[in-house]
Image (cartoon, rainbow, N blue to C red; front, top):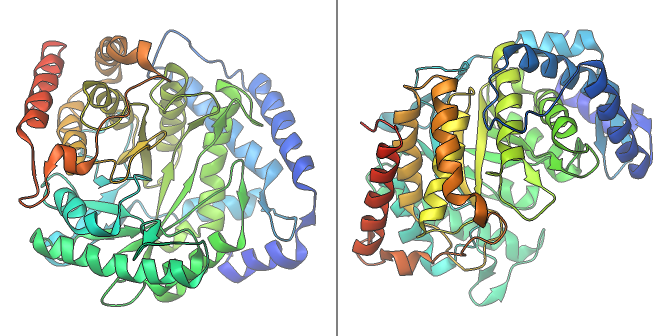
Length: 457
């Protein structure tokens, strides 16, 4: 019998084992340490993209054993949501291998992708954490929606509304959320794509819930439910998931192992990355057919997720999941450099190529440390789409050779990359078109990567 959302809630609230958070965190470390030895998980420091199928399969088994041992920690109640292997296998058997997003002519299908899959991944664009302001919401997101390669996009409300700071869970957040979703709907209408799938990313559940109505987040749109690293949930995430099930909209459930924290280094974080999938399918009720599952990695050190260790973890974990489940898996592109720089375009290219050949759909771009308001544009989403169209032609070995070359172009700047520019510095806000100097830089990088062997359409 499949676990339902009320049974998950009961284990989170009433019947799950009680445990202090620190004890749970220490168990994460002891379990990943044990399992990396048991399954012989070793980080290959010489490759950026995992090329070892047997390692991917061992990593899958390690991640599954990790989750069955750990469960999901509920922070408010200090209870652990545990499942049996039989319960987990039943959910995995019932995962859909595709979901439908958007409506009308803007409908898209997100299918399970295999390793080296020739089918294009979907592009979910956005300026993730990029601090979009109230005044720039419409042109900024119009710049993303108007890109033909974009299949959907993420947005979050501004941190200041009508010159007043927005506070988590307060009336100001609800007001900001409601105002934002109206502006986002205006942006997609202006772009001529009224049915485009939207993913809302408010902080609190109550703010996300207040955006869910026919004039805001429709049932063909979604909201995202977070996971606190490692394997922790809270009432906001659980409430978001419960609401999406009852309202009937989509949900993105994401998790982000922290490299160098309780899971340990590359090997332990890779195990936690795969283990997070099982958290997402259980707590996120993915078998109901309305969830896509997003893996991010977060280096504890000062970097985006385009360094050597991050790319290896993303590719090894993605391949483990793609080879052994039907999950509709998405990966986040996180860069050190900001928009309007060659370095950001290099980083995006490396991450997107690596993830495309490893079974992911693509979500981004997220800057590791956004320093400006409106810190992104639609051109980065266009770039992700262009890169995927070249990457689906590649084997992992070919992708590895190209990404190694790209990596040399930005490796020295990881952790000290330029912050880049704001939307208004890179786009004409009135016409919502890239400024000539940004287009010139874009074309220059495209030509460089073509010289390295990437065959653009």
